[in-house]
Image 1 (cartoon, helix red, strand yellow):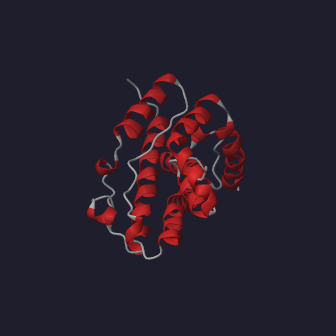
Image 2 (image 1 turned 90 degrees about the vertical axis):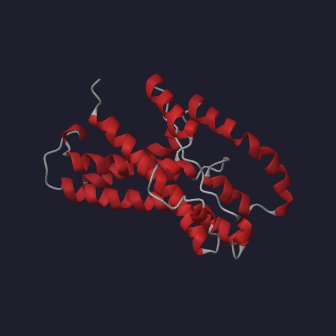
Length: 212
């Protein structure tokens, strides 16, 4: 079976981006005093400890085979808020670390891609040389992951950020909603175009940047 080079680019870019996203949570937690992720062996670039059987293998394969949007995630890096020096503040920063890492990776990959293609006669993405093609895919994947994880829906990072900003009087209602967040997320992804409407304007800006 012939595998399109872009399929390889997207897959490798997604694996790397998700792993770095999760590691960043653990590194920031460690900085603030919680070594749970380190003791669990999760501060590693080895993909095996990060694999979630459903989110890392089954769901992406089903998406690729059926043509539905590809959702994927790694096992969340364990964080013990009780071990942080300032639980509410530090957990907010830990939650921000993942999307922020994706945006930084996106910016670095976009800069590198623009430099590599500057002055070249590339009329479509299929004309890009391998390194530029992979970096292009890596930039887009990280842009998507950064934006997607900012959605305030459990279990995404945006929900953790929202939870730590909510006034105490709303927390009881929030805790009742939280177990159903994954269902809401699936409905939004598979039955609406809201993700595309959020993502497309940012993608256009990224493409404009790459064109110089």
